[in-house]
Amino acid sequence: MKKNFLCLSDFDANEIYALLKLTDHLKHGIYSEQPLKGKTIGLWFTLPSTRTRLSFSAAIAQLGGVPLMLSSSDLQMQRGESLEDTIRAMTGLLDALIIRTENHAWVTEVAKLATFPVINALTSKLHPCQSLADLYTIYEEKGDLTGLKVMYLGDGNNVCHSLMIACALTGIHLTIATPKAHQPSKEIYHHALNMAHLHTTLTLTDDPASAISNCDVIYTDVWTSMGDTSKDKSVFEPFQVNQSLLKNASPDCMVLHCLPAHRGEEITHDVLEGTQSKVWQQAYNRLPAQKAILINLLMH
Figure (tube, one colour):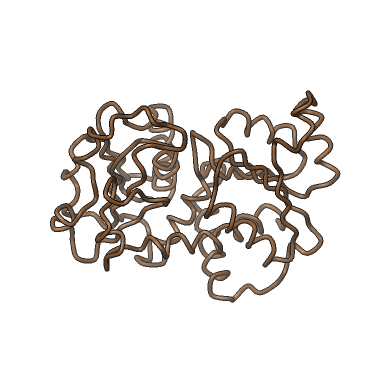
């Protein structure tokens, strides 16, 4: 039976920890096989991408497979071919499909139509591939995830949504500090609460200083997502990750950002490049994390 990677809640806590251990093996060269040899993986991206495109392309190639970039402008859908017929044609030519697009429902529909695994490489609703790399970076630095305290500051966007699910599955306490008008989806918030480990907390607040003193990880993201220029950035200014905020955190508190960063907005340059920042490590961890996803879906 085929598996997809559309949301981290497609996997239970044991499966997530297995993915993290596989990611660790892949990063440190313990797993050196080429399990994707002879396989062709499509990458269908309708949105800009740097880290996701590079890490998946490199992961596929290093595992022995062939990454094949697909552009909507090159497909016959531009001339009226249906999604159903397009996916049916891909079925005999691809072994998996990685999609990055705005519309989450569209990715879900592709997954229903396809007989091969489908990977969600970002939608406006979720970014599960990023969250797996986030979890691994925290795991790599802190060890056991259960009981850790993470604080997310900024916009309640797709990265925030997937982080809620990731923390709920692994027993991490998460506090989300956003302006009241920019809180995460209530639907996903309640979904994460329903799957949360016993005693795991998921807190929403509009006070950026509320949980800084005892947190293990501070996480932020851009205030305006791709194509969204309508937000009033001034309401986010109290949620900036800067040295003043870090003074109230413990010295071993680590800072994460999924990138790209708008230096001077959601995070200052000195924090991004400071000793507590694990942002570049987090970015590089996309590679072994994507490898783990591919192996899990295509080799089991």
